[in-house]
Image 1 (cartoon, rainbow, N blue to C red):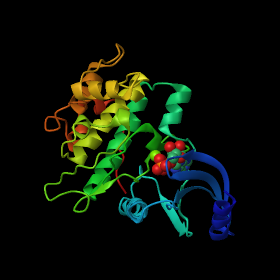
Image 2 (cartoon, rainbow, N blue to C red):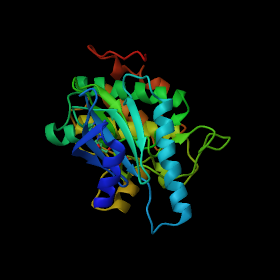
Image 3 (cartoon, rainbow, N blue to C red):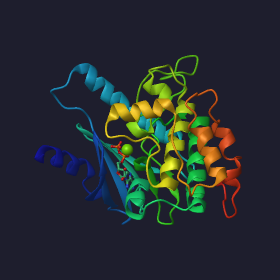
Length: 289
Ligand code: ADP
Ligand code: MG
């Protein structure tokens, strides 16, 4: 709307020139932008605060969610495979997160444009993803929405984890037992224990989602899919899937360990990087800075 356009032009005036839309979500729009002072291109994620009609509870929940995304981003800065937060601005209606521009787009669009990856290329990306998640987990931030749309690629094809909008914090969203019951995530990537409405361990749920990502990267399609949502959920809960014939035995083994419907049997984040599939030639595990 014109009103919204005016509010951002005021706050961003003389700071960031917004260009085309790079992506959008339920309550956000991400713009290609230029930092006016330095001439550097950046991404600006505009997260709308709720407007009426909306209950005070909804408004408070939405405000907490923006604050949580920002707090999480700040907590996990300083890793080579986590998106960098450069600046934050806010108007009455919108919070603007200024992020490093990922010139390679999202892993989702790469999958759509170029199809599946060969195992060595997937291995490199996957190692970077696991390293970023380990870093976030070690800082008490659990992503809960790992999927190809939330994995960005820089100009050299390096992975950047982004979108902490659904994350959980240790000691806040989690109980004393480290478990939570908030169902979230995207249907195809969501762990069975979340669908079964159990209290779940968000670390283990992130491992499941990473397993779905790894399968999709190397197969070119989802491990659990169906014409309708209930059918998909049934397949996820059954934990049954078939690997394509071109998967190596090491890859089958790792995916089987990640997509184990029993969370307590599932491979731990810390064990993934030492799995034989990740010991391929040419694979280098990034060292956190
Ligand atoms: P939402 O919380 O609405 O899902 P995201 O942060 O996931 O928002 O961003 C939505 C989309 O915008 C991403 O899937 C990606 O395609 C694009 N995008 C987000 N951040 C960047 C960035 N820093 N550089 C380039 N594209 C981005
Ligand atoms: Mg997203």
